[in-house]
Image (cartoon, rainbow, N blue to C red; front, top):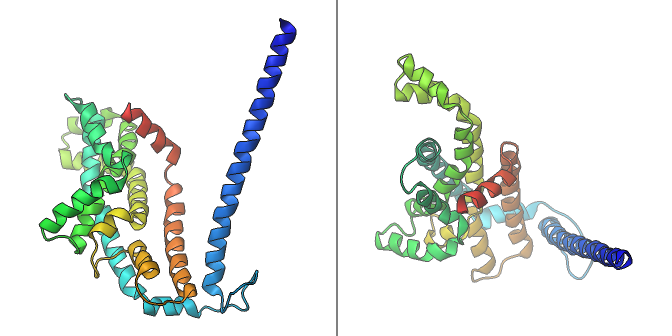
Length: 286
């Protein structure tokens, strides 16, 4: 029996080693492919001419100027910044009080309300994006910046609630009680007690909402019009719209989008651990 048990354990051990090696190989292959695609886009955005060779014949920066003029990147970036900043501000103004209520108050149906808040984060945006776009067009908000902002608020506000709730739970309620004992009203408690303590969480939530709004394609694409396109939607139209365009110019626009998103994402990751968000989503969903 001991010999058979040792043989079985040995087979399981070898099986585990083979499986781990296979997973690592697949992950390495995937990462190499992703890195290769990104590198090819970046190199192409600087290439003068690149046909049938490993490397371009020469390099130039003129495609970035061409993309700026051809795709009107100045106007697109201005619209993107306006939409993103308004979405961030409104989502914080709505999401922080909602997170405070969920963190501090117990009421009937709290679990159902929390799950309702998390639904836009748990389901793909396209599943509720089409009905949402239909409603906005019926209200004559489709194709406007207001419609794009309202559409982006649907997942942004729950995301702020998700990020801010752990920060609020870490604040000792006795601090608020002590401030009220000394005569501070609710707005003074918030401004002088809660706000300084919650500032890192609010900053993290704002940065993460900013990154999500810049990268959110489905909802923005369904609602945006010619004058309300964000950078990601403008990039899509530059690739698939009718007409002949230089590949290098489109790649320059893609690099601009990648760099913009990556900078804000790296900045956001300095303030929040994404593993905590995943753990909380799973816990709340249960």
